[in-house]
Image 1 (spheres, rainbow, N blue to C red):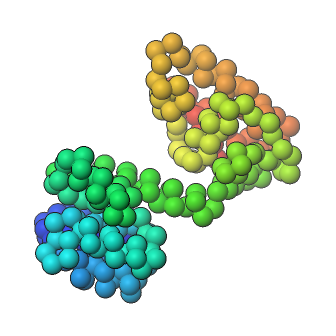
Image 2: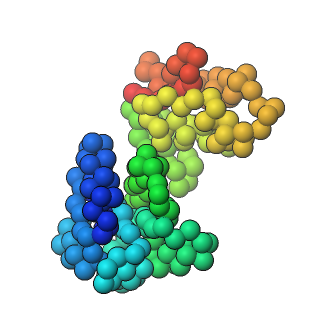
Length: 222
C-alpha cells in the first residue's frame, strides 16, 4: 500500500513515515503543497495524509486541486485547527476524514485502514471466503451457489466477521456494533445468534467457516 504524507513539520512527517513503513506501507513525503501535488499527478497512492497549514499552497487548496484533477484518493486532513467550522471547511474541500494535532499514530493508522476498506468495498462490494460470497450492496449471501436467508442481525454479524476475516471479533465488539452496547444484551443472546448463523452458514458443508475462539469471541476464515 502506498501512502503520501504532505507535511511541512519534518519531525511529524518522518515520525509518520516510520510508523507506516513499520506497518508494511510504502510512504512518500512532500514538505509543501506544490511538491505534494506533483507527486499525486505522477504516482498512484492509496491514501494521502495532508497537513492544513502548509507553506505556499495550503492543505485546503491542495484538496480542491486534487479533486479538480478527478482524483478520488482518500485524504485525511491533519491539523491543529479544532473548531467545527474548520472541520466542515476541510471536509467540504474534499477531505474524507479529519484528525486534530496532537495525535496518536495508532489512531491515524486506524483511520487510514478504515478509509482503504471503504474504498475497497466501494469498488468491489463482494467478500468471498472459500465458497461463501457476501454481496454487501444487495446484502445477499450465497454459499456454493445456494442462497442463504439471514435475518438483519444475522447478516450484520456475518458482515462484521467477514470484514475482519481471520481476526477474532470479541463479544464486546459485536455488542457495540449491533446493539449500541445496551446493558441488557449479554453473551448468551449473542451465542444464540451465533448458533443460528453458524447453522445457516456451515450446516451441511464439510468446511466450517465460522469458528468460536474460547473466552474471546468469534472469527470467520477458510
